[in-house]
Amino acid sequence: GQYQLARLSSDAVAKAVGLREGAQSLLDVAGAHGEFSMALCRRHPELSAMVVDLPGSARVGRSIVATAGMSERVRHVEGDMFAADFGGPHDGALAFNIIHHLSVEQVGELFSRIAAALKPGAPLCVLDLYDRDAGRRPDSGSFLGLFFHLTSGADTYSREQVSAWLGAAGFGAATAKTLPQLPGLAILRAERAG
Image (cartoon, rainbow, N blue to C red; front, side, top):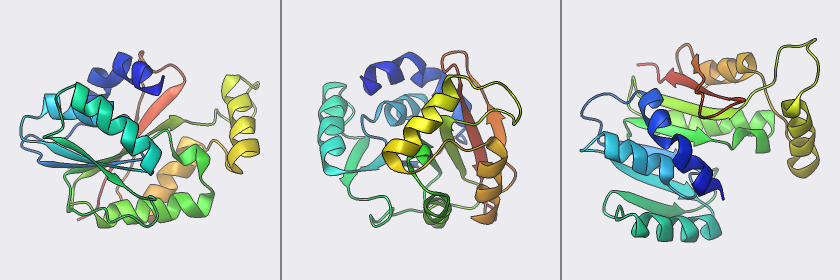
């Protein structure tokens, strides 16, 4: 189901990620189905991607990527995001729809691990559902935040919080991009400091 939803937005997301021309290597953390990596590879002819995910997700993702004929450019590595070898240095990284399952400490650790696997100037893009401004009426994001807290012990975070954690991990100022194909979600993009 996540793959089918991703297909509706992957071309727009690939454009919003903003990889530099000639990019050759992408790290996709918890990328499961691999659709966003495949879309970036279609957009950048020299690019190959490494998707790191748990064994069950990697197995499904490999099948999807093979069916799409992209196995030569998108490969799955099985492993926990806090222990797997991220390789690198990469020209960019994705962390999509994962931080709301992590504690504050885990988000910081993940961002630091990703920074260590990137070239200076390479972007990390974090796609997620972010908290709305304080004082506003609860919406579906508020209920999802409660759901994430009950199921993962984590929460949705604000753009400001995530931007600060990116800075602490060695990234420059983050910019936010919203896409009509992804209502309620945003991409925070920050480049690794040189």
